[in-house]
Length: 400
Image 1: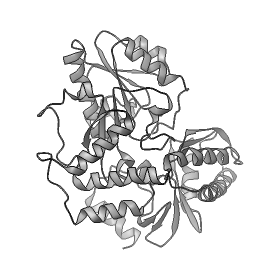
Image 2 (image 1 turned 135 degrees about the horizontal axis):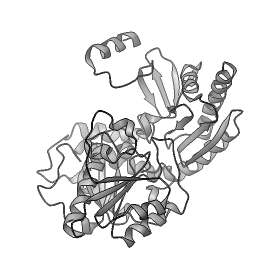
Image 3 (image 1 turned 90 degrees about the vertical axis):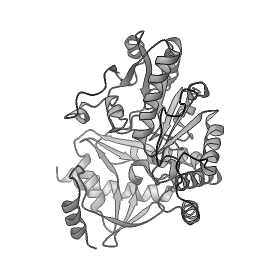
Image 4 (image 1 turned 45 degrees about the vertical axis):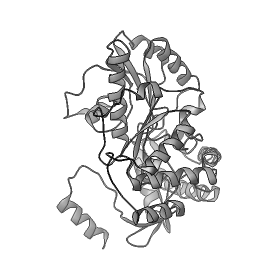
């Protein structure tokens, strides 16, 4: 099927809520993708941090194939040995948190928000208000959207949930000033991915944790994009020697298979009794089999440690570009290149069109390119990607 035929089918049958680039992929392996015309690409976006082990990792493929002929789904009305094994693994890796499984980051954040409200009302004297950060992104469902600090996503869907207050990201003092006697939780991304890979100072999260403890406010960390090794630690909060009350995972937790998770301290988990919250598909046999394979691969191939090394290599190469650069920032393999000129969309397009091999990156607004390569990426692939990027930048600047 040609790209034109695919685009026509999409126009006939899909709602037009996505702005799609003119390419359709049909095969992937590792850091590589191939489109309908047979052209090869280096994938430095990985489905927006979803394919953390690259495309069609052999351990994931084997786990999926094995489980597909065994059992897919029985519902959470029954015990599930794979779900129990996955929960225990995450419990041990996180330092004692208990798990609720769902299907996406938005669902994980919805569960976190519901639990925070329930804790506030039943354990913290009736507290119910929630603080979030400006420029944050937590998902598209009503609860997650309500704590997303980007008004452009709110337009047309108001009124959203009440009791939400926003503070500047990276400003611990502003958080403390915003807390009142009815505040139950502060929800925060350790690194703001969707607004441009905004990395706070090293003392920000420890200060936030201390303020939350001081005022008896739950700290909820959205690790949907930063979790599962992307920052050079399995969970980003482990860089800062803190323990959130609740944190969420999704994206690469199952290497591309739809899955999400909310993890909570045991003392708060007891409030989620039968009937309080649920997910029909959450934690089914297929998803859990794949997620267990992801954890095995991360450990056996030492991919978390590799993410730190490759991230440092990528940022060093980006800083050496001949380009109008304002800043290169990131942690591990979540990286942004911010230009001093509004050329990001054009550079992205030139990377995609590059011959003989294209490069897939993400433009955030007019100035920022985001890089989210798989944790399996090699130094040679990074070097090749930066060469393609340099040509795209040079071509764009010359035509300005």
